[in-house]
Length: 116
Length: 115
Image (cartoon, rainbow over all chains, first blue to last red):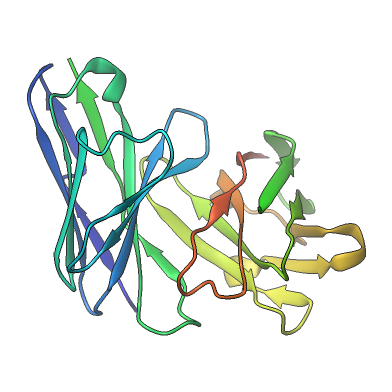
């Protein structure tokens, strides 16, 4: 079945540094990928929709300059957390949909970011 | 606008007992409804989905859900709980053109199985 690979699975970084998270669709092409953020014991909050070959669409309240999204190919989207702060610590999950309106979303296993 | 409400942030059932996780939706268009399961430090796995076909939907791991328009509900059930069912469960909704639309998730229900 379709698989979405997310890397790294966890990362610890210092305040002020930037962290890049990759989301790859392994056996299908995804024109659209989604980035979610999940706070402890809470639901997933959609941050942005990543569109291959064009700018990402950000949800209200999400800082575009802080959470940079690049979707350079049909199998790879990246989320870069710039100038990370402790409040950015969270679980980030990506998802992708295989082409076709009846295809379900496939989720990556998430990346736990800890900013010290 | 669409939303889902999951009643009960925590549910505990004994092993072998019936599992019932509640989800009510609000949607101005015919909804597509989903149940996902999340194990600790992992992404989400689709259990089942309703896309306007049969109202009783069977999913993986013995789970099923019934779409009831009159009650705006999409409750998840399993006749006999297993220890491996312990996880976080999320109900989600999207519009009919869900190939291009975003999922809106509920706040989740943590299921604990009592040996």
